[in-house]
Amino acid sequence: MAEYRRKFEEYTLARRRYEAEADAYWDSIADKRRLRRAKRRNNQDIVLGDYVLTQPPVYSGPPKPVDPSAPPEEAPPRKYVPVVADFLRAAAEQFNFVPQQPRSEMDYKRAYARTASAAGLTKEQAVRIYAFESGGDGKYDVQAGLEQPKPGAQAISTALGYNQLLATNSVELMAEKGDQFIRILTAKAAGLPEEAKKTLQRKLGVLKSMIAFCRSVPDTWSAHDKLANTPKGLGVHALNLDLDVGPLLQTQKLLDSIVFARAQGYGAVLSAAELEMMNLTGDGNGLDIITMPLASRERVPTSNFFQPGGYERNPIAGRSGVVSKLIAATNAVMDQESKLQGAKDLAAVFPK
Image (tube, rainbow, N blue to C red; front, side):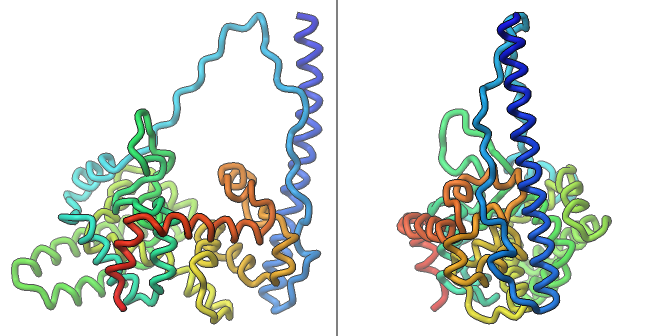
């Protein structure tokens, strides 16, 4: 036991030193980020010194020793992540709603391509982001962690569909853009045969109930996140599986980033990788990345655009090290995954 206590003390001291260093580093990241936002609001130039230029500290001390007197530790059970079957059940139980799922994958691809094109997304943006987010051949109901059929595979988040919307994204989009979706679908219903029109009108009634639910809390990410993790929130997420509503949700997530960039004065057409930077790191951080001079991209660490937990969970961000390599790695994945059949099919049906 004396040897164990000695090793444990060494480990504890090393961890404390590391955690103090890491806390100071991430505090500096947050301080610099606030500075850049203030400078952007005041139309001031952002310079290299406005970023942290060192990489995050890595723990290099001794491993935690095993207590010889303690019983063997059992790994805690993995937290259950709701899956498509849960979303469908919640929609039925909470809203008496069954999404109109496509008869074939190509039906959904055609609907998504029409919606994305009508919203102003380019073929390159839609296809390459689909390839990056869904693995190049993902189906309309693909979920993070379940991209490939593997024994024992488990969902790692509620991220769903071509652009991998979280349940929180779905709740937020319905709260903020629900009226727009209602207008689009009301116009669509007007041109349908009588029976199809009645079916879509019934769906519109459900959508209005869902919108009211999504607006029952303040318009903040944290409030929407709490709603998303309720049975009703999971039911809202099932809208991504619906042939009428799903393409609207999946498209709007990307369109909001484009609108944000334009509102901030960035008028150039975003490449797929640039749009993915906004999708990956959030609109503000993404805009920071895409407006950065090329020379700075070679020196600025990717950690400047993530929270500590998000950085640790994102393998590409950690491996890339600096912004230029993150963009290059994203493009490389897009290049590779765009060769798969799903991406080819989406490209083939995208309007000219």
